[in-house]
Image 1 (cartoon, rainbow, N blue to C red):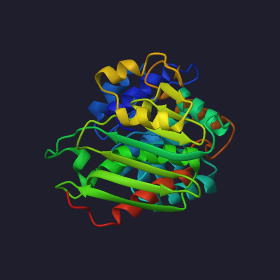
Image 2: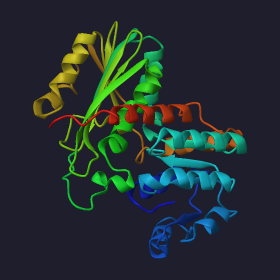
Image 3: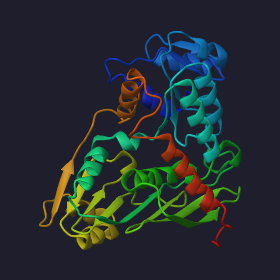
Image 4: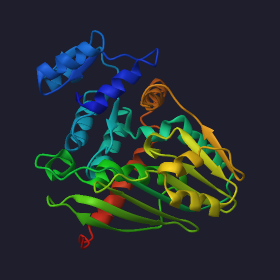
Length: 337
């Protein structure tokens, strides 16, 4: 469902999975649906949602429409008996995620947020190694994810009516990955800077754990370094830029070295030096073919074939928790610029 950029990337990556293919596409514009379908074999084009969801050729639905449509379309897919993979953010309110979870559980229909970063080989490797104790007990996570977007009339990034704002577009990544590594926090705080339309153009989050803290931010006001740092008692690791599609890990034998490398950023000579062999650091490259979206599809396919209504690697409870954190932050008055 949907014919935008992410839908095209996802459909292209399905070509890397031998047991997956695009059989149908839905758009509110039949012309767009037909154009998209023509790019991916012999897919059937729909502009009628009910007919699309009733199509017996469809084994599962990928929702890749504007943010504000995700929850309602996911619920209608579940009602039609179709397993559903929902592009991030899965919804614009935690209550809507809880409704999706209830519907999926009651019907025994699979549902998952398409937070594709969790399924990348490098992310899986990093999480596995952190869990094994490679850097010791985690003490701090730091990350910023920022891409410059001018505040222009009609921009979806700043339109509250379609679910705009930095937290929904970017913040879900560092928040979701932090929960993936540490679980839900004991306490949440944050602040935000408002755009002219009232959505957040920059957001800051602090997540407190019994023995760790996460300091995360996101924004449309600059192009950031876009790295994620995990500091442990005996070392640290940087998920290199852009960490939402990470393919390289930098392991350090001391947390201080990792923090210093993170703070140096990635510009110019620093980028070159940080790729060269250096005492106390090991670089690990885990490049993958395509855009990396195939791994979440593969995980969803495996869960659906196993008769599951959820994926242990990306549970709906954590999707709801991410939105509760954003709600907590947005409940604060906007900070002065």
